Length: 384
Image (tube, rainbow, N blue to C red; front, side):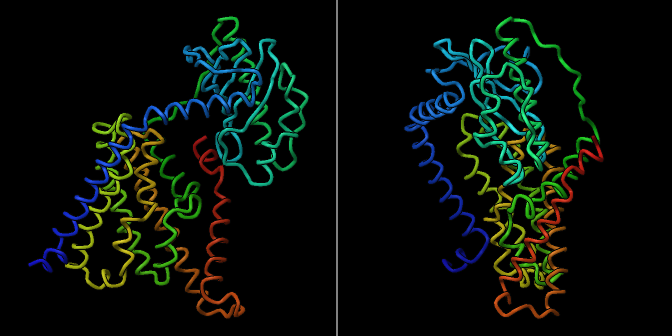
């Protein structure tokens, strides 16, 4: 009786549920006990970061009239001791939006610049974040007279535009005159879904760009049939997990219980995987055998968990989340099929002995990932 319970569908499900329930209670208790300390530490860390671009400031208060700010300026923080302001300003770089923290004193002079969030080319775009380059803006009352970085023009332009936006916002907060609102091009309808779909398949491929789901990518891509079967299973799990986790997060968890996202999402993913495993074992035993241990490992596939979390982070609607999950699955399938073809060709090659096996496989995977950099900008080209 116990063996049947342990090896069947009900046993693992009950054990997993009990484990998640106990973990949830521990997390809830820990969060309640530590939340005030975490908020205080987060506030102190944020103030310390802003003080780096506005020396002499003590603490900050957020400026509330965000609607009157120029486009690209996401937030304004005023130093409580009257030193000046810190602007969170985002502008378009090579790989997307680059966010900067820019300090401006009471005289309207730039006091410091820090790259806050970026995904730029290492060694080129990252040079914009070096002090020797950023310090060229310190003391300026405009964003002119600063040289661009050769090979990273888009990123250095992003910094220039971000500084210009921050200085325009400074005029708004000091004079009280709202900035003229530029007409923004909104994307709606079918185009919005196509942009999400094409982006996640080609530009932000979960395997080759975000490097999620590497375990099955390397483990199940030896044969095309197994690669396709795993891809279909992962795509189905992604869509089903999103269909369940999105309403759970938006209608049950919300911001108040956001700390439970990971454990709840893993429980949902594990339940879906358990269902698929039982179905494959009964109706497609050959595929079930071919997938082997990698099928239950979908539960811990970071690509599946990643897509459910990123849907929330990107503030996608329910339909947009489903499309993003579908695209993530198709992108996973594309990577698996391409790499299965590459590995098939590699079988007829004779690499140096030191590269035989895993080393040449990783080299080939790296080259395939690099090739996908060629799709950067394709979304802007098609839908811009």
